[in-house]
Length: 156
Figure 1 (cartoon, rainbow, N blue to C red):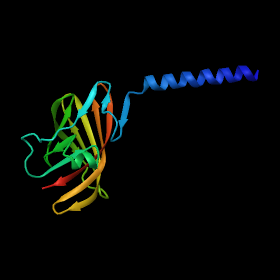
Figure 2: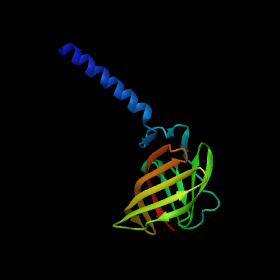
Figure 3: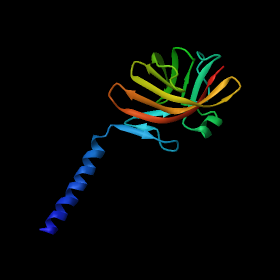
Figure 4: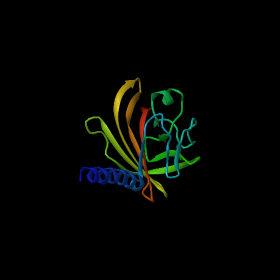
């Protein structure tokens, strides 16, 4: 009886693991992990699109990438944002901004194929720039999500 119970428990454990790994369509990535989830690659870029002039927010996956000028996100401090996805710079429009609440900001952006939710808070200030840290969630219209840590700054 005890031997049968152990086999049943082991089989249930294996099946649960397989089901969980197959049904999970969300992916979360840290600073040193790949940024691929079901065909979505968030690329780094070092030059801002021409639409970005003056005041802006720009983020990298971590402080090291930020210091090296490898960005994954930039916005014009207004209604336009850009992220390079699968080798193509995608343009986003601001759909909602909750502003500062206890030092936290939440911004939602949309494009034809994707939605972005930024959640970040101020962690420092150097002259007219404010250093920020948080997360960026990129969601495709098909429901695939990529969540990345972000580090960067906003200012003029």
